Image 1 (cartoon, rainbow, N blue to C red):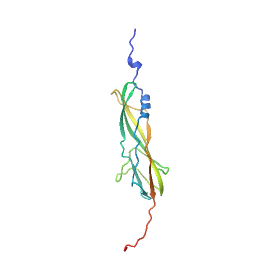
Image 2 (tube, rainbow, N blue to C red):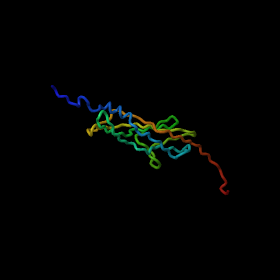
Image 3 (cartoon, rainbow, N blue to C red):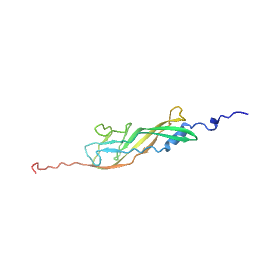
Image 4 (cartoon, one colour):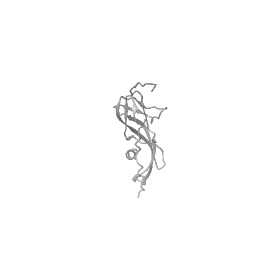
Length: 158
């Protein structure tokens, strides 16, 4: 009679198994903020940023193992609505510290943010390991109009 190690019958989750779970997690859909809010003007760049949290921790049960997955945003793709995509590794910042800006011609545009998420995980409090792959989420679209400012001469004495 031989002994059977129960871990042979139920091995800890593999990295690929954890990745499959990671892809199904309810990661946040980061909201695009833009400045100026509402309408913008031709010749003045629109500032993009997100102020949503860019990290999230999940604890999932995979076949009886407690798996802690720490997800973090690794890349931000700002779809500007005019065919351009601005890819950054930071979530942008509002004025006066803006890092993501885009110039527009007049028109109405719908922009949104695609966030790429990476993660690390640990099984039952063990060593922290990288999840082998990334996943993405698309944030809700924001629509705004870019107006052409026109000069109007007025009588300064009115």
